[in-house]
Image 1: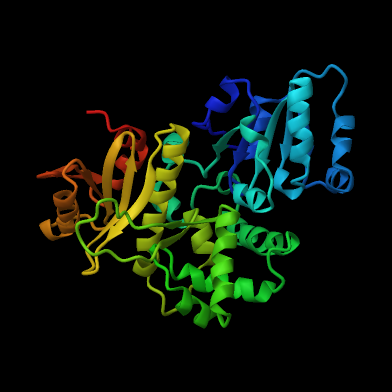
Image 2: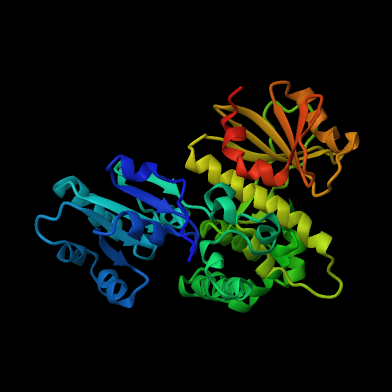
Length: 385
């Protein structure tokens, strides 16, 4: 069984309570058990803990031995938000150190829960990165199966991903009472998968899924709440051109996207591979940005006359613009949007990640083979000259 060394390390260095958020299956529990094997572990997915603590959150204190000084891990804390009041008091009164994992930060906030008033830091776990996989990274496999850790150990990773969609994206949503009609939500998931890497037409999605527009908007919010999808806004800071206003949509992992997307004889590989490659790059950008705490916000850029840059990163380390191309050859027309973007934003560093094998330097645009770019993404995002 492959064991991957994760890039995230800072949470354990400060010896301070922290939240660790991330979608199910990204390896939060495995990582914590590996690095904190002596911790007191409370798993709220187990009925033993869930039933007693949901009935009486104060009984958490009875699980902690007298004089305990080690870590206390509460897994999937969003299932019982009231526990945070007890945790807050235990941090203050007994100076205990907690790790609180969850698959939804926004769900806690929407329920009016105070995330410990700054008493705990917040970190995020993402699917594996290319850098973490090292020699196990294969671009073609990644585009097909994504980077959830379990897909590297399962004998049938495609089946695992289908089961993930069935048991989590559908059943878990129902168990958490986020929607009462799982049939409508399942149909919405499939329709939404056709918006992967594209701007969202909520009315169109609602029409195709046979639901009300307000229901479709709520379902998109649920996906974001559970950290299994993200909507990117348009980069409009000091805009010099007319830009569109719609956001772009992505499921958080390429393999999950492919498991949701219906496939039939009328679907071409190109239709799937384009969004899959964009998704792979985005999930790597998000992971590296969070692991190294670079502080970028991630956008895209698209003008009313359809000039588009796939990803724009803006933050204290600078401004980066990245275009994704599957083709093995790059022509000057392929860099037009980047050149126009740099005309509006001269400080921007512009990249094309493409399917070739040799880096190219095209004026102010650097074209990098996508596999090499992903393996070295932390250096690109560090933006050190």
